[in-house]
Length: 358
Image (cartoon, rainbow, N blue to C red; front, side, top):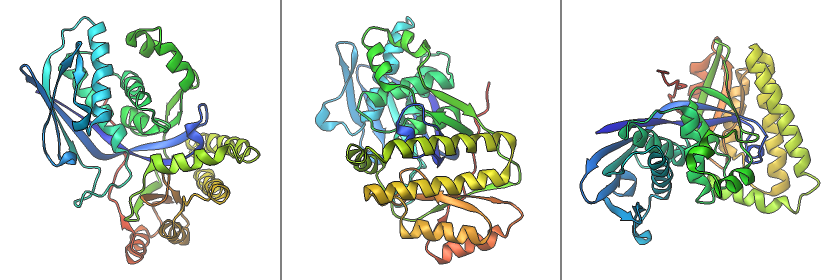
């Protein structure tokens, strides 16, 4: 039996623009996890998760590949992760086995509501890590990220794969998405091993250091939102806003690049300015597209933070879920959090997660 965990994530800056390759974002991995357990099985395997009511779904192999009757398959990300990872494992000269795979998640609350911490990315990453360990193969952040991205590409994900990057590399990261078209073209004639060992154009993942006196606060508004649905709504407007979108992308790239520089130089004031500017860009995007990114409660979360000289914004696609705030630790953080609670905002006691490197 082997186990592997992957952390959840939060976007700090660069949302919506990051789905376009070479446009940077900043993300952070947080200490809530999805854990995948893999155990040897005979003749037939199962996939089991509390997210599916706890019922195990049987799987077998068809033409040497994992097969689940699609009428019974709620685990698209997991099964695609298995298929790509097993192809990589076959190319490494290993014999495939049956196994039971089970999933445990901390990325929802006790009532099953999602916090917006990137469960689809984390479950894909944890599945790949567990399988590589099960077959005794080397595990690296880049390998996991690329296999997980291929799995998400195969189900036509409209996301940026930033959640995958945060779960794979952990800590604070600056991130830009690869050129999807190039990867899909290369997949047609390269082996999976050759593809994951290639340099992917426009891909960027860089660890960031955060000034010690700067505290990350996370507030949950209690209303889960669908990232895929919100991104789809914005994408539908792109062709009608040909004058606006290039400007939004350029300004987001400039803003987030300056924010990355501010993190690297430890400039707290510049970091807070960058967060506020990115919020303003997202507000303009919402106004132009008619998509509600910053809800009333997210706006309240930010308003309270600014009373304590913090800088805040929505995190991820918005529409609910979480807001983030960066504030100096010498401010009255306990009173800020109290004001959040009194306004119906739940502070999440999350910490940044850094995976120990071997």
